[in-house]
Length: 386
Image 1 (tube, rainbow, N blue to C red):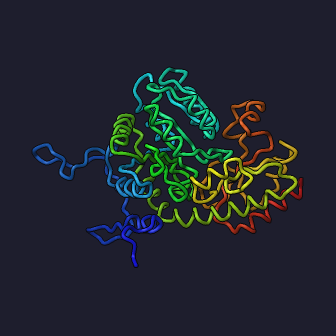
Image 2: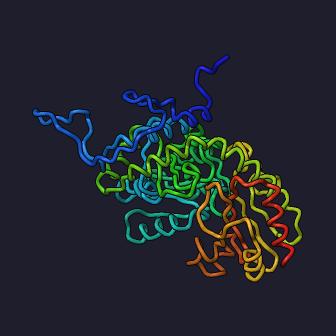
Image 3: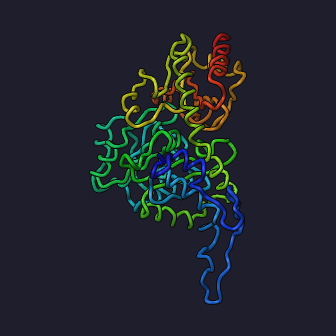
């Protein structure tokens, strides 16, 4: 018997069943027009205004993100950072925000810089500790709690439902950066969050060929973010919007495969003497595994490991890899490895990185669609050269 509501994988694969009414095309066209015709009475003929604010190429990816996240509205942006910035700057002047200690470091630096410039006040806390979050929020003053789960690069997990209760009790919104989880593994809005943000560059696109961001949530929240986006000019290029829609058609099968590969590779890594720690929420040994089982539908495709021997071991391991590409970013069909001390967390001292749980010898993997046994064999031969 058919479902009343199709499975999210079906919605994604068919892009909500979109068909071009004029041509019968099953794939979206790219609308490059920057302006739209007015009637003699000065009204826009099709209700569209100007491409920075409105373009037909945005309609379908936004509708699909809305459906997958279970929200009321969505927006696509020129980058994930643009999407996050619009959320933060939609807050009233003088707001207080709470953000994670461990998170995408470029955004953490941006938040700290905005706070230093007094755009808002910010505190960074261990978002896996509900006690720490309760202590950090300031009832009546805190307007936004920003969570990132799984967090980059330790892949720690925030209890979204509990964080939402704490935020709402203080009169704040909860926003969740769900880039690493995607709506395949979790739907934060259904757990009580008010806003979901994605770096759509990553898993939503999935092919390492576009820069984009997205925000989903209630009509009122998204409308305020839209207003800022239109003022600041953070609109996505029409071709980039098309690539996001194209990528989401395979989102479910890609994430399911990366999820299975992630667990298999993580389990293998956990048995290797040269690997002193494995950061993967799907492993029972992970400190947030119990929460992950409630929040996520699997451990995902992101993996962190710590090599015995620190910097020298990491350098030798990276040089020895054959299949795995040494490059930043994540969520693509190819497996990538990066070393946070030289990329995302380069601005921190070795002591500060160690305090954040990212010691020398830490490597971050984004596992792609290769055969898991081939990846394990590549890891094994690289470890053998240490």
